[in-house]
Length: 176
Image 1 (cartoon, rainbow, N blue to C red):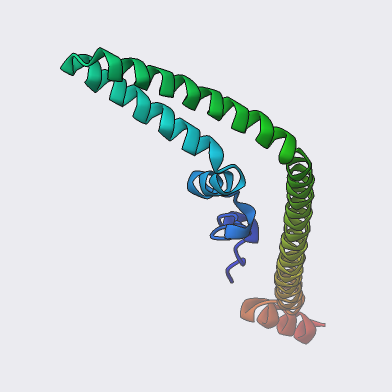
Image 2 (tube, helix red, strand yellow):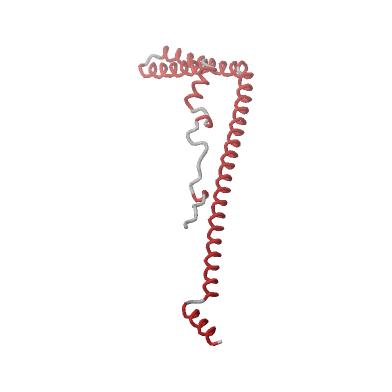
């Protein structure tokens, strides 16, 4: 009779494969959220880049007056971007604090769910292991009973003896 295979011989399952809930937002989602939170910063960067490009093309074409205007526009664009960053940091400071608290709570909740899922999985593995040990114990007990019964039959046969031993016994009984 074959012994059942141990559940520990199998590959360990993962409770979290394909579970999107345990992953963070990707870069594009974060970029979209940041653009919605502070739309003036990308606008200032775009104005700065446009002014720098205009200054470069004006220098190449030899229009120094337009190049000077574009350099001033670039300076204003950079100042606007910095002002938008400072104003946005003051304006969105409370939102950022709330967002950090929310992220920390979500991370804690996900960690708790992960722990609970892992505990459920460990309990299931423990139940499988217990069942497997019980099956092995039953198989072992059955084999031991069969071995005892076989030994008892062999001892009985020894006591009775084989056909030659029976003939010798009859002869002994007949002589006496």
